[in-house]
Length: 150
Image (cartoon, rainbow, N blue to C red; front, side, top):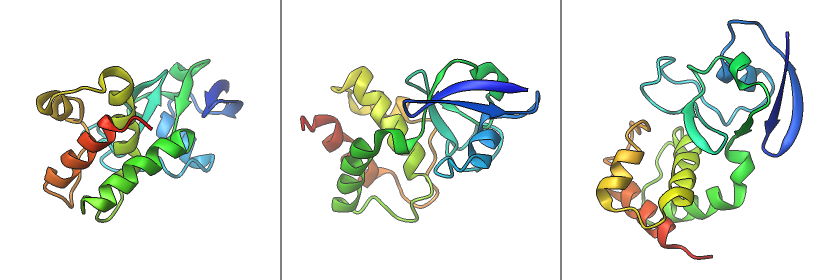
């Protein structure tokens, strides 16, 4: 079956199976920044923005995305680069596997609540796990990014 999606601002049609998840469709079509992690919505590395909101693509049936806007990290390249610079500056970046999903989630947070408190940041990021860091440097980088007016 065929579905139509707007991915990173570009309208595209995809052939899918009825039981296929968005993660599988995206990766098969070379959106490899969307990573496969746990396949049960626990880790967040498959996060994409669905109409601007972060969702785990490993649990979203592709057929339910018909006509919706999907954003991968390539769709927010400049913002992701800003966040990456803060991560690097504060030593928050290690293996990088979670970076695309983290960037999308933090970008969404900034659009919703750029003056988020420490607790609000932690609550918003609860679905994004990083196996390399202790989150302190990441949290500091995220606060700097949220305060960035450029």
